Each structure stands twice: as C-alpha cells, then as structure tokens.
Amino acid sequence: MKKHLNTLYVTTQNAYLHKEGQSVVVKVEKETRLRIPVHTLDGIVCFGAISMSPFLMHHCAESNVAVSFLSQYGKFLARIQGPVSGNVLLRREQYRVADRPEATAAIASNMLIGKLANARAVLRRAQRDHGENPSLKTAESRLSQYLRRLETPMPIDELRGNEGEAAASYFSAFPQLVTAKDEAFAFSGRNRRPPTDPVNALLSFAYTLLVHDCRSALEGVGLDPCVGYLHTDRPGRPSLALDLMEEFRAFLADRLVLSLINRKQIQPKDFNDSAGGAVSMSDSARKTLLATWQKRKQEEITHPYLGEKCKVGLVPHLQAQLLARHLRGDLEAYPPFIWK
Image (tube, rainbow, N blue to C red; front, side):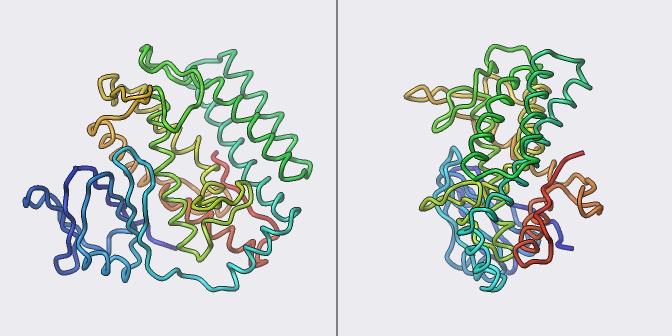
C-alpha cells in the first residue's frame, strides 16, 4: 500500500526554498527555519510571495514531489509536476468514458452517493452529540430523499440538478452545526470568489487544500485530473479532482472547519475585511488550519470498501486507485467513499 507522506505548506512571506543534499531548506531573511528530507514529502504548497531555487524544482520533479504555487489567500496559480505515472491506455479509457453519457452518469451518481451520505452522516453525528434539532432533522430527511432518487439511473444533467438542491439543503442546516455562539461566525449560505464571512473563508481555504490533495492522488495513479464526469470540462479547471473531492467535503473539510470554530481554536480577530466586502484569514489562522489539517490526515480509519486500516490522508489516493480499477474494467462500478 502507498505510504502516507507529508505535504509541506509554506505561508511565511518572502521565504526562500532551496536544496541542500537530499533536503528542502526553508530560509526567511537568510535564517534557516526548516530542513526536511525530500523523500518524506509528497508535495510542497507555497502561499504568496515564496521563491524557490531551480535546483530544488528539478529535484522535486525527479522525486515525484509536486510543487504548487497559490496566492496568499489560496487561489491556485501554478503547479510543477514531474513525469506523470501510469500508462496512456488508462487515460484513453478515461477519455472514452467521458464521451459516453451513461457511463459518465454512472460514475457521477456513485460519487454523489458518497457526497450526500457523508453530508448526512455529519448531520446525524451532530444530533447524536448535541441532541435532535428540527433544522438538522429536516436537512437529514431531504438528503435521504435525494439518496433514494440516486437509486434510479438518471441523465447527468439531472444528477447535477439534484446535487445542487441537496447541497442547498445541507448548507441551510449548516448554521446549526456552529455551536460557538458568536455573531462573527453567523452563516447565511455558501459564498465564494471571494468569501464574504469568516465561515466561508475557512471553507474555501479547506476546499483549496482538498482539491490539491485530490489532484495529486489522481495524477499519482495516472489519471488526467482535468477530465471529469460530474463537473463539466473547462480550460484550467481540474474537473476530475473536483469530482473526487465531493466525497470528502463534509467528512474532512467541513468537519475540520466546524471543529476549529466550535473549539475556539480560531477567533473572530483572525479575520480581516478587504475591499469589496471580502473577508480574509490572518496568517495565524491559516497556520492553525494547516496544522490541524496535517494532524487530521494522520488519523487512522478503516476504509469502508477495502476493509483495511489507513490514514485519512491516504483515502483520496485509495479512491483514485478504485476509480482507475473501474476504468480498466477490474471493478464493475466505482465504489464511493462512505464514512461510517
């Protein structure tokens, strides 16, 4: 089984990364802040004004360590990736399936089953921990209805419509999941580009990390992250990575954000109002989220389909492997990740 490796997140502005021997060295104002062996990493993510030596870029490419550059607030800018693993036959089959409406809808439907089942599990766990809540109960019931609809095959456009309605039902109950009673964390609905409140700022940042991990997982098994099934193709958009991450939004990203708020690990003072009504996270808030994200990925669960114990950070890779096996014809259907 693939070994879970760490991702190095660099957020300190004007940091410089370079290679010394077989290690990545991070310097700030010529002072060494971190030294870490390359073989312990599966990726490096740089936020904002971070520079890197060409020698380190070459070494990362040769070592299969992807390097991503994002804006200081998490907008994807660029990615450096060495030779892609896998064979061309797998990608050719991925493209063929994308051109077959029924096959596309079957994969997208199973991914949506994973997404809605995991969102419903988050609502159920909240009621188990904090008592039944009418809003949560209503949203749970609606998600159950949408899941029953998915038992019957439907065209891809209809699937996308159901996904939108189900997401609206889930987020309508999201305020009830925020137990930290502070007006700063009031939530009136999902918004982005840019987020206009602290909760959405946290969600957007967590989703950025999640899509990065899903993209790496897909590339790791030889799939093209830009040709998806649920999300339509669009230049520059990693549609298949967005497809895959749907199964992990509630289970990983949403639960982490709620934990940070409810445990008061992140405070209202950790956010700044920007021009045009945008809300951004402070450096300390980003570092807290990133540290918690890394810790969460180290936790162990039992994979619901494989029945094996694995670290949470490996689950996207395992799902990418299962998707590849389905596309090769080794599995009759793609088995989604359903949190139990």
